[in-house]
Image (cartoon, rainbow over all chains, first blue to last red; front, side):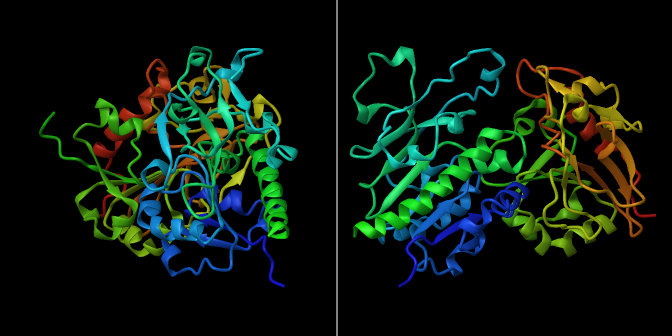
Length: 223
Length: 211
């Protein structure tokens, strides 16, 4: 029986992509590393999940968007990390840029405002809110029918519009925009882990990959 | 100022802007080329090529011969970032510093250089009181390099410059793009001198010119 938890990851050829993908703790999760400019020469059929690593050149993703969406439409999981201009090529993704506060943690007891809003989701058996907390560069508005997993809670949004109109998602799961599943986040942990600077990002990737592999295996059991 | 011909070519990846490009200091002096159009660039029209942290180094390796030809013609290559794939034969992969305390992240001046003139060590070491932005490791230099700035008590070579035997000058900063450093609004320290002094150095440097 062929494995159902095969994961491929895109590599943009940068130092931090190279370093992050080859981190000894992460490397075993990746069945193939695909150099993004060679995506169109690559058969994605063997894989059940494809990870679009953060800070990948958005021009490459726009160029290869049809192939990525087709992958999801096979009933597979496309994971899209931050700073890849997903709103320009990914179905359902709407985005608003926010000024990045790199410095919130200098203030003792500061609350950067992130909240888990789907605590029942299996991801949070592996990942804590602290693992997802460093900074963000903007927020998504998920399409109607998608599930927000982590959001930014802002006091001045108490009288906020209905879910469908709110730009607040840090991480969401979308099973409506394609025939498969999109996991979309504005977080960029590979870049920061690959720059050896932010310990939360190192934990985020480890726990996210651990969950993804378990989830793919269990998803197949249900079918 | 309108008469200054752009001397510097900055490689960009995607449509992301750099603070350096949006800053008046670079106006008319810096042009850009998309990473994947590098093979179409008339490099000989420029004195210097800036290669940023976010570069696809696998692609640069494919164009190593073009980069070396540019240097042999007297060009300057300025690389800011961590080496993963040596896109010039003398480059070596980045070695991260095993830093334990703020002392390990102090930046020290080892030699004067026009780019770092009047740039205080403490303004490189700290940003808003936080150490580590400037660099957290080093790309090992070739033996003939002049070390300009070092990191921590082991004086790890973080910034250096060398002239190649076949002509051309290479300047390496082992950290995030220093031409963007301190150009953010309300973040003005002596470190903000680097971007302008980088361009002045490029425009006046004779070191790498072919004999």
